[in-house]
Image (cartoon, rainbow, N blue to C red; front, side, top):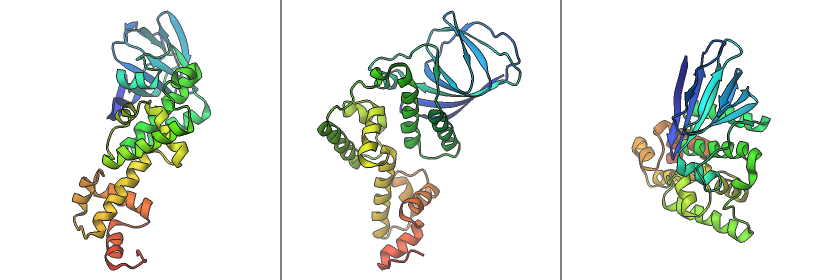
Length: 275
């Protein structure tokens, strides 16, 4: 009756597609023994009772899961529901929510923009797109919904001056130049800020995400190798941080406008034509 498919697990974050096929009726009382999560409802309607308070949930809402809560799920209709659960470990949650591993109880409204972002994130994960990008987008999504409950807690550690924001962006670029694969939570911790605010400040200053910057660094590294005559595209993909050769090909086509083979020919010959 309940199925959970994990789509992403990295950097303290797990994203799962959860399908419930419970028939109409009252659920069973029990204790939530798992971790911390923010759950987005995609389809269906149900009531969740936790700690003596019932919350009606539908696709305009999200809700939180907190360890140790007594909970029950009641379904007014047949056909069940579908949700997306974003699980956060304690360190990642604390970095997102004002330095404390906690989440507000109950339901949280999800506006139209956040709902579309949630569904785009799910779609990108199902297509197997970049994990770093997914982590960054998921944390931004969590922050946008939690801000409706307490925006002040999300602001903790946010750089307040232009010079501080510039230093944060430069520190990010410096760290990624040394290691494009460093996890976003680790990177933010080293720079003394939260992953969400690092992503926001970096995006505002550069016009692109931290994940896109990673990919551009990897693209430049691959181009440098291709210009040097590297023929082993599978090995090149692995050594420059791409998932596989097809991932390298997709990214180079998007970033540089041509396949690795065409770029290698052009770089070797010095011709401007990439066909």
